[in-house]
Image (cartoon, rainbow, N blue to C red; front, top):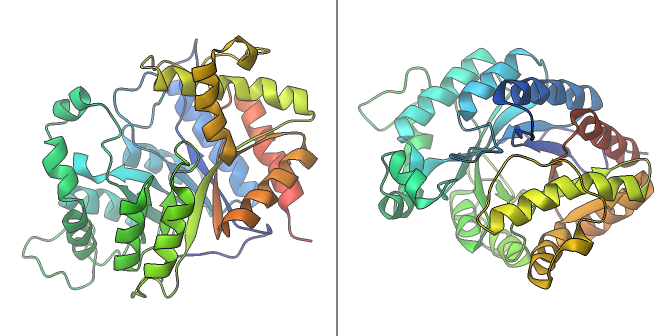
Length: 337
């Protein structure tokens, strides 16, 4: 069974971190901020802390995901750590089994492995990773099955993952379309949807997953975790100011200008043209921005609309202390009565 731990919150809350590199900062600083965040949310009672694999992105430091997870795991003690996710087309299933088998050996019972079909990069970067993008993406379902076999107690393959064999690290399927929903349902795996940046097909994917789900040795019933952006601050105005860093980064990325996470800008949306505002309108359907009470209402409305079993909270905030405060404020208003 996948580890679906009890939660002190009304719905289990977890953390998605991209280890952002802020303007004026560097990767080392980002890693220290990530560890500080993981320790902070562990004390608050969050269920999981996941890092996402991206390559060639000036503002994201989590490219070597398993290495950074080892750093975070060594600095924490109870929170589950994992990949949200490993972009499997970039890797050999054997190597991933060895990496996450190593993490499981170091931090027993604390490791998750989320798998995605996207490359986490552009075509040029994918070629630099020495993978054929189309061919490797087409092999994704077979690679997932192969990877799970490497981590099983009695693998069918002659080659053994050492470490890795017998680790049975819980596998999740990640997705931003209906493809991942269909695969997760077919394999009987938990499903994490990237609604925090690509919400367009969220409801359709959830419906397909729940209707098509087949129980497995890992999971008896469907389990949906949804990405959700939260920027909580003492006031609505301050929260919207802090969220402007994420909004700038999102517009820059979608406009082909990826960069480091910028400092917040007052009145940012008023400066944008209609097309850029439309980009933000779409992703804001899966975001809560405001005071603790405002955020509380928006989160509960999202859960009511989607029936999510768990939320994976993202908060791309320029100031690391403000980011930790946002997770604290969310925890305080979402604590079970």
